[in-house]
Length: 306
Image 1 (cartoon, rainbow, N blue to C red):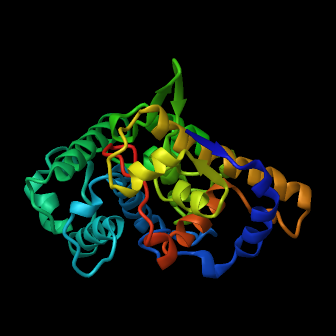
Image 2 (cartoon, one colour; image 1 turned 120 degrees about the horizontal axis):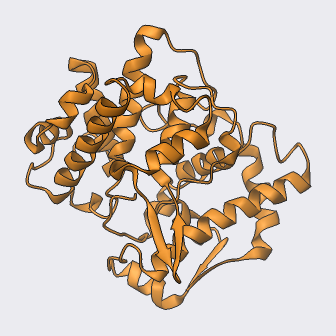
Image 3 (cartoon, one colour; image 1 turned 90 degrees about the horizontal axis):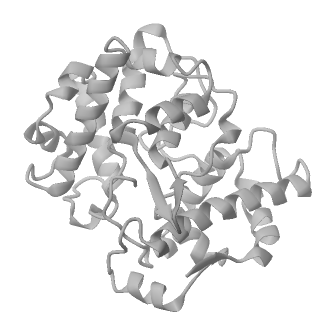
């Protein structure tokens, strides 16, 4: 149902190469912090760790985004992120104990949504789990959770992946497929924000969601079966964990790994030392904000994975 168009890889790599490391490819700080990690004052580090872990624990729900109320922000993600930022700016971080007792009404007030909305309930459940784990395992400290990884993004991802609030493993043809989108993006966000300095970010994959595959399809790097395209264009929900949905995400991951390999073969001009899948993900994610990509429907799945 979905496949990588291998012959498009070399040329597409050349198209993306000028954007790698370019400041113009970086979104606003509320969506993605700067790629280069900056030192964070110790007093602010706990708050920054709490912010990114809290935000990434609820960085899902794209299948519901068309049903969300959006006022000053244009997208579902921006709406949620801005609301959480408002809470942190107005009253400081939610502590781990506060997260365990968070109500739908409180979260809904900050993100400007109906407390009865299904997505709000799922987000509150995820934040309860985050608070419980940080409180039980790390002395209520978000920074201690980050430090427990010992400077390894992979270790942090493996830790978060065991928690319900960051779970993201699908089944395909009898095999487990661990996408771990939000656990991986949490590691990248913490690194970019200066909370951590991970030396193994190059071991992460892209953060498989529904936007990056959409960009790759429209740019001719991924091929979707015409009937699948028709379903997407009819705004039909694609079931999370279905073969076609797993293929969409998996092929996007594989395509970016092929792009990385092709860039290496092209030489340093196309593969700067700091390039990695997380950075390519950022470029493609920002590319997807352009009107020509937004004008075409992308697949929607209702899940807590993305």
